[in-house]
Amino acid sequence: MSELETQVPSTFDPFADANAEDAGAGTKEYVHVRVQQRNGRKSLTTVQGLKKEYSYSKILKDLKKEFCCNGTVVQDPELGQVIQLQGDQRKNVSSFLVQAGIVKKENIKLHGF
Image (cartoon, rainbow, N blue to C red):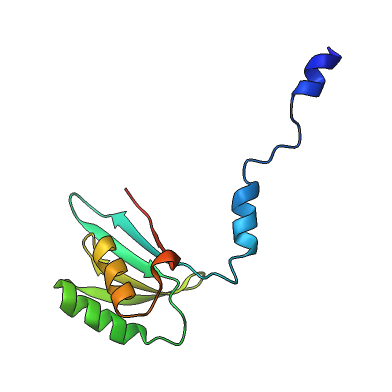
């Protein structure tokens, strides 16, 4: 019995890497680009985590003009300001943010599907 007890690791934490990343999240800010399924084939793309000094309305105006879709800026109590766009625009938004120099490519996280 004592042999089995010594073989079982009891201090293994499967979320240790995630907690370590969260500890350094203040130094490396990520921009999260997500897609949410609405009804049927309709979807919604959300962009959160942009720096506060950027004008969200100007970024939204350029995104809407570039991708021919509608969108809005929503104020969330937990997440702050979030940009919402119609359709699945994840790849388009990430490439636009990199080309505009707003965010570096390694600081963008794509979520969904």
